[in-house]
Length: 474
Ligand code: AMP
Ligand code: ZN
Image (cartoon, rainbow, N blue to C red; front, side):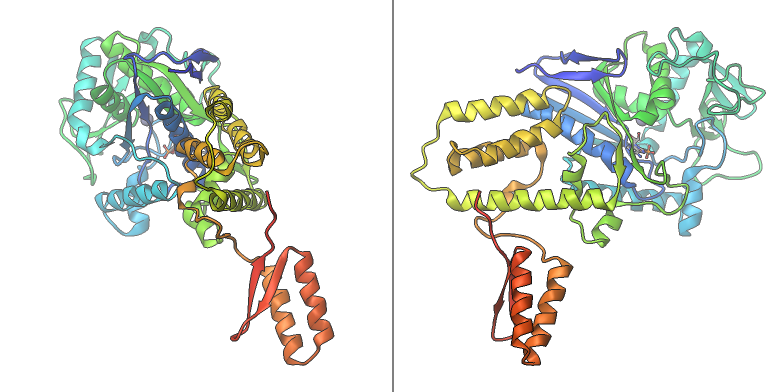
């Protein structure tokens, strides 16, 4: 196996990846809370996890990838306060929480399929693992990490040595009422609920019996319980977005390690945020961009995938339609080049292993250096433009690279250029048609030249005309 280096949030360093079991990798990714569609920021996180998984696979590892579906309502704030997200979502849609959970989980799966994100080896739902979660609370209770208040069972973070290590949390410096508000009964500002009691005067749509009373689990609990169930007490990789570092993942570590007495996860990986110019993407703010919004604007899911590749996962992305446009052009251009390469492949091509190894090595060096996919795309272009490689060698390499990139090069037909005619060109073509119908041939010719100058040609047909892009050779 080639060496793979990953930036571990826990050590704040790039570390060589050494799997617990040789040749295998266990990976847990926090999945969606299914009370609404995923926004394009969430999708960045799943894309990053997909690239990570594909890189592990590319290096010959057998990957067990587990993703949860948070279908239990948890509360809007990290401080265990506010409204239940699922119940709020259900009210908005006029459905039950169970119905919206199913609907949005389905929509999520459709989104990731469109983005060519490989499905996890195993999906697990929080509502189907209540027993495991109760068992974990019991374990923590036996070891003295819990206390009961009037609204639930809480985790006493002061009892856990190294609490907040992952996020380098300055416990003393936490401002009350800011990120973590402080209820009278909580012993420490960072304490969090393991089990919340149902309100005495109201039946919740989702609630379960427990040794402490009817209620529902705290939202950090499911990931500890399910990841350990499927991957073991100590496993290789856990990922998510950076927002999960200070609270969710910090609390997962506290819960799991307090119960098992072992290190929970060896490598923590987090992707930075995708932001809109107006700031953080937020579902609670109402309108937000989802994959469907991009498709409605005429972009393909893979235009967005290519767009996400333009930035390293540990850097913020400022989303704009202009930036998406340039990624779309880049991706179209790429497809055209690949189409041309495919049309040039002949049986006479001799595959030179040294050539293949040289470019293959370059590509692997990028991806194995903490997922440097941006540089890997540069190597892809270098391969395409290389003047020594023949078409078969190029195709061989590109097909191999696509195992990591997931840009569906296999769907590109040979020699058939795929593109969309820009609106501006369509308009000029229409104007030319009108000029012709008015027998203004001088104007019609002028328009034809203008269209040619912009890289398109127009051909008259029996029924009207056809526009084609003028192809450049590689
Ligand atoms: P959630 O459904 O809020 O739990 O988020 C699902 C995943 O998306 C988690 O890994 C989050 O850390 C991640 N995430 C949330 N917002 C963004 C964003 N704007 N950019 C990138 N990742 C995000
Ligand atoms: Zn989680």
